Amino acid sequence: MNNYVLAIDQGTTGTSAMIFDCTKNEIIAFDNKEFKQYYPENSWVEHDLNEIWETIKITTQNIIKKSNINPKDIKSIGITNQRETTCAFSKNGIPLEKAIVWQDKRTTSWCEENKENYKFKNKTGLPLDPYFSATKMNWFLNNSTNVKKAADNNDLCLGTIDTFLLYKLSNSKSFATEPSNASRTLLMNLESLSWDQELLSFFDLKKDFLPNIQDTFSNFGTTEGLDFLPDGIPITCLFGDQQSALFGQACINEGDIKCTYGTGGFALLNTGSEIIHSNNGLLSTVAFKFKDKSIYALEGSAFIAGAAVQFLRDNFNFIQKSKDIENLAKKSENNRTEDLFFFPFFTGIGSPYWNPSARGCIWGMTRDTQKSDISKVCLEGICLSINDLLESFELDFKKKIKSLNVDGGAVENNYLMEMQSSFSEILINRPKNIETTAFGAITGSLIGNNDLKIEDVSNFWKLDKTFHPNNEKYYFEKKKKWKNLVTKIFS
Image (cartoon, rainbow, N blue to C red; front, side, top):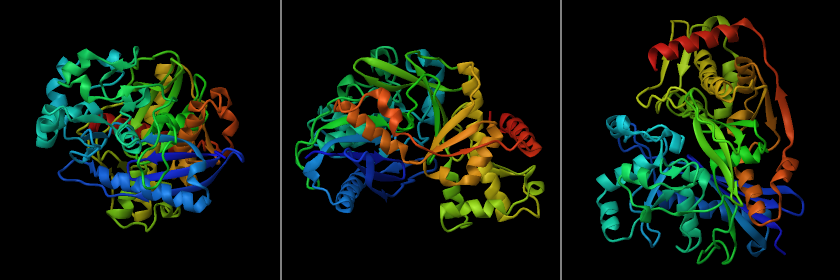
């Protein structure tokens, strides 16, 4: 009896898999596997697609074993993925190069050289920035012998991670994507939700290289020829990770907003059927498309969030585990951090400043600065980066944000959430299930199966805790100083 949905959540630092029991309406198994990050040159970030594919197999096998289910009872699969990360592979599904990760800045100079001629922000909702996929595709074609050769031989597939995984799962039968991913490429027209010839020409790309764009919740094909899953399981949802988290947070109504604290921090606000073009450094994007109805969102992107804590763990050995930063940061005192700042701009600044050349720094250290102080302002730097996004949302949406739904591994840190509430002067709502990215893919797959209605997604969301602002003067003064310094140094 087909009672289970498999979610594959392919993220920046690891892959997660989740099994959902449709009879019990609960997650019965979860597994995560990290993979290697490659830094071949300064500001370059790459992933090995074969290693990513191996994590798909391992995590899927592990959750099948943990849940003790028959894989033939999996009724469908939903996929959610790191967006903008760009893949080049042959029509046999063989990677031609390592994937260029969304954090990668190798196309910065190309963007600078061409920004005067880029007149398409209303069409794409995006600025010209190395963050987005088309700049990376252009780089592949101009710098990789393997990719150029494949293009000449009509053997080239370009796409984001969702497209690569779908292609592999379907034994090279399904070459597709959907609008929440396609809207992050700089190649899709936001209104028509199709590849745009004017944009393709700007980046010197051919439509033949790109996948078909389908509804987010639809039939993308079935599994075939795998050694870890049976043939014939329908793949009924593809979802960019941040839009999937928006959906998993039950932000299905206009004005609903969430923020995911993962490697980076990403806030999305549901704008309904309206495309809102930002005047304050935000992105216009697609939340999802279903049965020809398009739902849009505004997005603010802070490239570094949880990765800042990993930096202190791995580079400075401040802590053994990321979660240890909470207790260490609590040992700090306000009088030692009033003028101490951690700017987590290791890979540039996203919204609202959009400066790809910015770099991280710790500002204002004195002889008495301690590990606990740096740990505390590291958390503050994450919160203040997110607050910059929220202030832009209020300006563009023209409404006060009163509460924010949060998810991602970092939100287990109560101190971080207390800080965010206090800096932003809003309520922070943390759900019981903080793996909402994977859960969005599960609910999306159920919708793609016609087993669930969109309006019923909210029935799955359960509150764990609400954090309330601390109105100490410290937070107001720190926020003011942050704004002045970021404006002077980085913008």
